[in-house]
Length: 239
Image (cartoon, rainbow, N blue to C red; front, side, top):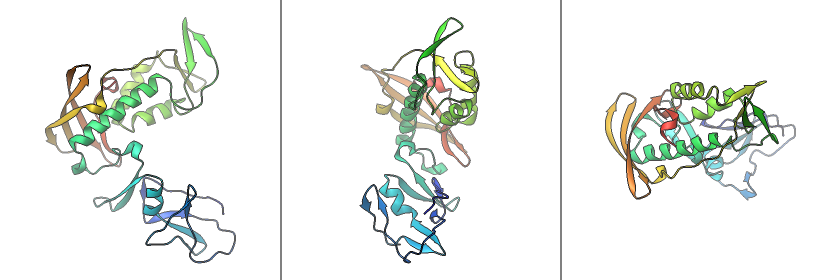
């Protein structure tokens, strides 16, 4: 069986595996991570293609599935990006806090150069000690795409421009100064209150613990068509 296509995120109907090159029964078994998955609609072969129920497979992998009535679409979300795809009316105060907490993790992952494989060694550049960014963030396209998981395209582009001169691009690959850092601001324990709502935009007042005090921030979120709710504030606002 040759894997030809896998559709995730928005799946219309079911996940399609095609290219079956041998005879098989109409109904087949589905195993995910060694466990057999049972569903109301069985995995089956139709016209030479293996059809797998999207909900059964997604939930077996720890993802959430919901129906987007506005776009007539089945949406599958990995828990890591549970806030990415939301209908306009679905964003709650709890969701806003979760989005900010994820943004803080994004900021520090970028600061340490990513989580993928790194080229060994560092090098000197314009009097500073640099390191190559990891494979998950080692190009401009990957860097901006990662930011756009949580931020509006405008804010992602603005942050990229702000990094020019700090992050360097050499033969298409990115490198950054060797540095470490962290934050004591606990965005994951914050409390948010909706202050203003207009078409496709929500503004929350967020109280964030810092040691034994609270910092107060106004956080604007904007709905980006086809993507979902995104933070419409400078990337280094949440760190």
